[in-house]
Image (cartoon, rainbow over all chains, first blue to last red; front, side):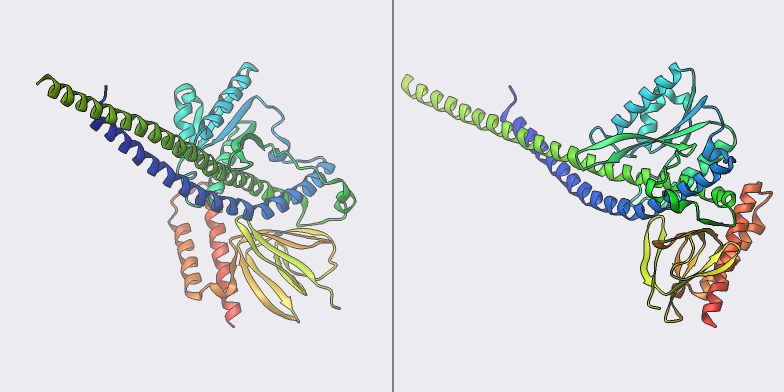
Length: 294
Length: 139
């Protein structure tokens, strides 16, 4: 039986925890809003880039010569997974759901006899995968996920790394894994293929328009500039979605934690009061029966 | 003619300007060119230089871009730029300093790899274009 003092300490400690979690919830809430704004602001560029790429890809494919970034290396023996996670924990199932999906994918690919390599962006993903698949992790990019604002330069850094690896023939297919932000409650683990580029289809109604684009200097040179750029844009988009998802997940997790702490405090307080009352009653009985015995 | 052209300048992080103007002059990879309303559909690379939006025959807003792409379609003209700065916000001294730094970086690089060298040379070219843009705007 814990003493009254123990129980009081316990209640105070849960109260302190609740204070922390509710503060974290508020912080995550405001960060979420900001992260969403950034993701929103980045959308026009990505959309335009996609439509431009679609036009170019169609034009180049008509001529039959497509660079490897677009057409692939012609085989798909070696897969690279870019695992984008957060740098911090305390955000519910955010990191573990990504890692779980990655594990599943690795096993699938392995069972098909393919080689898998990993590039980790974000500390948590690396920490969780290191034990099992430490030998597969070929690169770890730190200090991106934890930033206040993920800049395009960060995405370019990742893209640069991928391009180097691709040119060195380290992999045939690259896929990025991240959490797509649906709402603060719902994040969907998403696999998006980066290399070869999944060329977005040209919208049907613009079919006629496409043919009369003029290209300057020419399709291939534009494409050779556009593809690496597009890679960075795709990664940037994924990182931003991921950042928003992280804050959303954390907000929900902290909200739950705050609520649980509240319930626990209620329960403990009830028990504390009962105990106190029982003690008083016991003391009274002792006094009364002592007096009677005289 | 009262026709106007919808222009958007976007960089990966945000939309920088979205306006309807009379004409845009762009630093194309193969020379500057102007885009008027009803221009034929076009996709072009940009070199480092100045994007100018014209209204009533005079440039109303000018931006320095470090590079990028432009798409002209029926809907208007979209500039996908990188390293965008409003021209009036670049100080000449800063531009000079940046060029000097870039040149020094290139000179200091000991036995750079081919890519490294290309990257540094590109940085110098951008810095030079930036300085040129500022000096021209001042004169």
